[in-house]
Length: 322
Image (cartoon, rainbow, N blue to C red):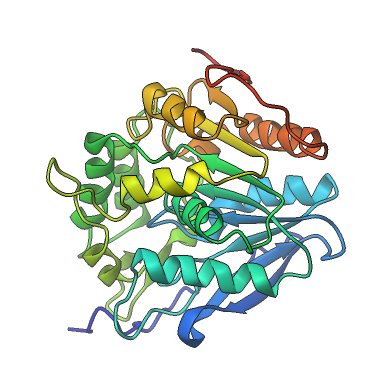
């Protein structure tokens, strides 16, 4: 067998779509790890750095990134370490500390302070990085279905899904069925070719998720005695220190972030805006991409002026049901 920390031969490396406006880019993360990215738009425009969730790749943001570029932003989608085309860590280090160190290195490489859009793992990483290091330049933060307090059952369901298919798939139809079983409220795609962006095909002909299985050593199952990958107390401490404009977007059907958990974040970040998207679960951007991107754009345009203090219960609904 191939050791989990050694990247196997990949016969279907995913490049940017030929008809997209993306330009391949790379960054050097902690300890020299190479992180791959795609850039939509020119670096002279305001930069939006998009961070995906655990088990995803930068391609999850492609539609949003193209829309942001069309609106005058420079959107950069980044593969986290061990995900997509970014390097696998030789020592299997996918700890919170290394994720934060990677983000720190990427941000300091950019010519201007970025706006960060982070989903799930990406959002938690950004919350820690920005809250724990006031010198890290960032002009605004969008958290996608994530807060310090998450629902154990929803987090467990994600990790169990990731662990369930480590032996790969025989076909794209099997991949489609697995995703449909996890996310039944989203209609399965009629064109299965788009699924390949999250897969790699090895020499045995089977399809595997496009991330290092060693990542699961750090993606621990939460329980009453273990918090999993991210510590709630540490996240709360970091959230209290956020002074930049913040938007929290939650999927109404999410089993990972509850409304209570979202409002606890609003108590920690009293100037934050809160949007709930109807007919969306934890994978908010994929479930309601057009409305999600509109919400992000609206926030970015509004946050060009200093944010006003708001009551913790204030909610800005955008196609919402609360």
